Amino acid sequence: MAAERLNMRQIREVLRLKWECGFSDRKTARSCAISRPAVAEYVKRAQAAGLSWPLLPAWDDATLEARQQGTSV
Image (tube, rainbow, N blue to C red; front, top):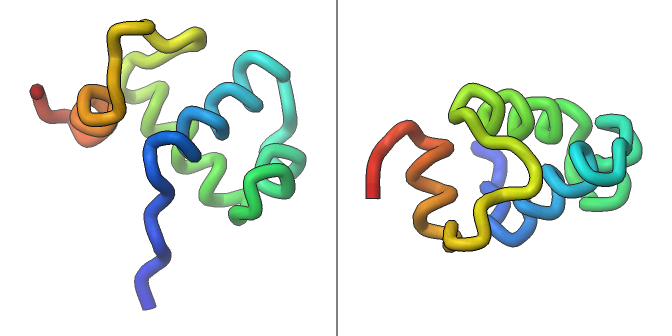
C-alpha cells in the first residue's frame, strides 16, 4: 500500500522544524504525525532540489512542489 503524500503546507512545516528550529528527525516526525523515514526523505529531496530555509517568499506551493520533483513551473 502506498503512503499518503503530505501537502505542501505540511512539507513546509517539516522543513521549518528541521532547519529553523533544529529539531531531530524523530522530534519532527512526532510533531507532524509522520514517520521518521518520511522526514528524512523530505529533507533529502529538499536538499537535492537546492532548497534552504527560509524558503523564498515568492514560492507558492506549486513552485515548491515542482522544484522538489525536479521540474519547472
